Image 1 (cartoon, one colour):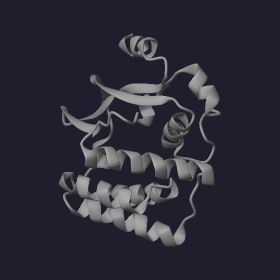
Image 2 (spheres, rainbow, N blue to C red; image 1 turned 60 degrees about the vertical axis):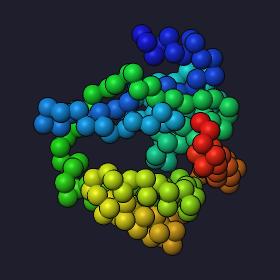
Image 3 (cartoon, rainbow, N blue to C red; image 1 turned 60 degrees about the horizontal axis):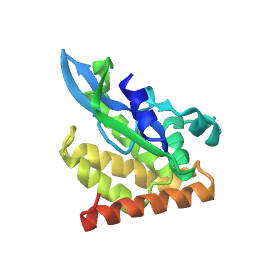
Image 4 (cartoon, helix red, strand yellow; image 1 turned 180 degrees about the vertical axis):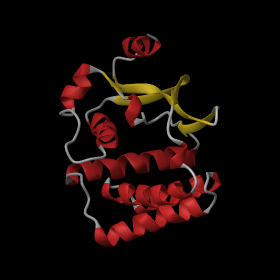
Length: 178
C-alpha cells in the first residue's frame, strides 16, 4: 500500500520497490540496498513504463535491463529504504559459492555495458564487503576476462545511454551534489 502511494505521489516513477535483506541464521543481512536500483525479485512497474520499455528483455539480466530502459525512456527508478523486504535466500549463496558469484557479477557488468572506470570504482567501493578484498578482485577479474571473451548484450544506443548515465553519477559524486 505504501509503495502504491509512492507511485501516486511521483508521476515519473516507473519502477519502484524496497531494500532487500536476506534472512540468514535469523538475522537480516543487507543484500540489495541501493536507492537508484530496484532488485529483480521486487520490481514493481507503472504500467505505462512497462509498456514503454517493451516488457522484460528475452536474453537474460532482464531486471537490470528493465532499469536501464526505464531511465532511457525518462522514467525514474527507486528503492525506498523505509520499505524493507525479507528475502529468504539459501545460506549456500554465501561462503565458497560467493567467490564464483562475484566473478560472474564482473562478467555481467561487462556484457551490460558498464564502463571500465565504473567497474574500477565499484570494485573499490565493494572492498569492504565480504568476501573482503578478494570479492572485489574476483569481480574485476570477471570483467577483464569478459572484455576478451564476451559480447555486449545491449544495442549501441543503450550502451551509449549507460555510459552517459554512469558518467553523470560519477560527476555528481565527485562534485558532492546528489
